[in-house]
Amino acid sequence: MSAFPPEQGHKLAVALIGYCAEHMPSWNTTNFVGYDLEESGGNAVQEAGMLLAYGIELVRSCVEAGVDAEAALSRFGFQIAQGNDFFEEIVKIRALRRIWATTMKERFGVNDPRAMHVRIHTHTSGAMLTAEQPLVNLVRTTLHAFGAALSGVQAMEVAAYDEALAIPTEASATLTLRIQQVIQEETNITAVSDPLAGSYFVENLTEQMAKAALALVEQIEDMGGYIAAQRQGWIRTEIEENAERWRDDVTAGRRGVVGVNRYKTESAEEPELFTVDEEVERVAIERVKALRAGRDGPRYDAAMTAFADAVGEFASAAMGSINPDKLMSTAIAAAQADATTGEMMAVMKAKLGWDAPYNYGP
Amino acid sequence: MTEVVRVLLAKPTHDGHDRGVRYIARKFRDAGFEVIFTTFLLADEVAAMAIEEDVNVIGISSSSHGHMAVFEDLFASLKKHGLEDILVIGGGVISGKDQAVLKEWGVARVFGPGSSSEDSVEFIRQQVSA
Image 1 (cartoon, rainbow over the protein chains, first blue to last red):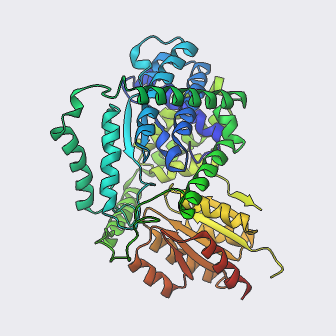
Image 2: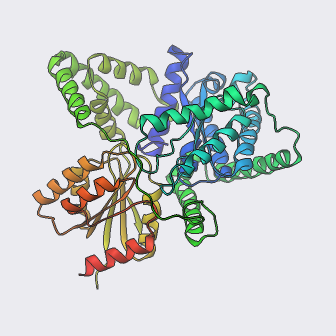
Image 3: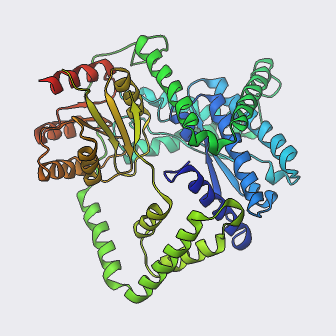
């Protein structure tokens, strides 16, 4: 889940959890971004199953690195997508909560409810929004937000109707907030927890979703776990194949998308779009220049040398022998010596490796 | 055309929205192109990779803005290395206003939302064999 090589990115995640468990126990360490899996083209089963498979891998590695499973698990958060298939997206959340809790309890013996809870921030889908007839996206995002509310998520962010055209304007971003506020203030659906419970359809579909996601987890475990599956390119290929299938279905008209392959209209003018003021870039550059000119040179050099040594040591350490304290304390010292994120990332990219170009063939 | 068309598809800047460009990568591959895909590089690094991989085509995908600076730097870098003959195309979320400017700069075509993969394959075949 990072542009570092899978094993190194995974070690970094464990190091952060280990450090925080010791020094910053109230910090929420890890955001499980199922959103990226679904937005990249994955379906609901893949989002739930792959998230859980990575969760198992991460907690297993935490334990290997000497971190308490309960401490690690109770500081996880989840960013989940809410896409078009209304009930499928709702049962994805219901199923994920169930299989996450039972799996973590069974595998790692946790008992604290906080260590089994899937605390969700929903981000409504951007990939489902269309450049054609952009105002129609308001209807789509309202349905996404409505579904997320029925699923009882803890927080949400709604995508803006002009996202397929540009970065949102202030006006379109405000509307995303209003959608949530109307649901929260005017519909009264937030007064009840799990309002769809007991519906034969929802319960049955939840059961099917849970089974399918657990089968996927088992398949990934048989490959050696999530990181091994990622290393083999299996995760990426599965997601891409599904994305291709989806797009081909739209192109061929097998899957209806209003404004794209149904109820098309002659192209209208572009709405007013957000543009970035070039002054913003100039100010940011000046700020970095001033920081570099004003910092204590010898202190910066010493801190960066210590950080580079720690990253180098970390790069070759096995999971069971990583030293989160050394890595994090040297990183913090470098930041306190006014090292920029870019300068520190350059060290990490050089020592840990970086996403290699991917050759699609033929 | 006797040689295999070599395409570098890049997603520069801090932009992870690669669903569309990866879809295109698969379609280009299926059309018989050699496809190299990269993310998170600077325009200069994209140009360097274009040289290393000896490509005929560079495709820049943009979904989070910042593409004007990327194209500006990329063209400067290609010019510096005498690579003005490489076909440069764009894709993703690029406004009509930006597209008009990019055309003047030498971007052969921008394939935005609603474009078909067949069109882009056909366009590259025509341009590269011409």
